[in-house]
Length: 331
Image (tube, rainbow, N blue to C red; front, side, top):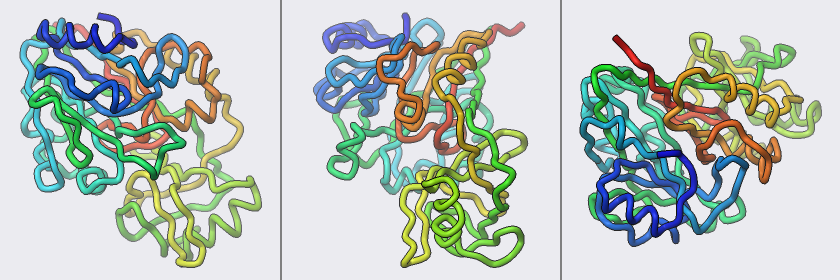
């Protein structure tokens, strides 16, 4: 079944037919769904041939045809460490996190150290709300165990694949490193950072952003690093110059060498060209609302259907990234 928007009544019919699905939509659209083989997160932003903000229909990623079997788990901050070990031998883990909750922070700080985290693709997104409602309402998750919306639990859908199929997670970053900016290294991992080294000398990240970066480019931009060749962004949430602190939308890791993102990317053009080049089947696509707004995607053609959210998941919590779940034939 094609990944796209469907009416709530259609989704209810899919659930009652036993379909295995990841659902995305507004809280109003997702409430009161019947029990079944599904998990869900709130976001109104999606790719459905064009960029859309949709509050009535539900975006459906359906995996019924490739799922030998499936199961659902609900996690909090104390149990999220089991996200990978509860999976199948050959499978996929879809994870939806509610933003700015204990389970969200815990996963971001620690996921790469979880047992078995790289055994299967662990992909998904951070549930969100309309941008203008950020800080006013909370994001929500739900699942087919009871159909209830929650504000503080992560939900995971586990799928076992047939032996002739294999899944892989791909990370696409449309940004580039600005090598004219300084190298920043943090002594600890976390969402909140202050003291650091700047080109090897003691410094403060808030002062650097305010006094060096903002006068140069007019804003704070994002930090970017290379992790074994993969470019990873850390999106800035708040710069508090008085406290000398910067908070991020995902954890900045100790020891990673960060610089600033290079400005001037044509996100819509790059987005479409990159996703149009995909050769294997893309089973699911998750992208950041930063692209949606930064590239003015609303009403514009996009090359791949999927959803936009406040963070993406590919083994770790990411920002301003495209994550695809791709299926390959093997044997």
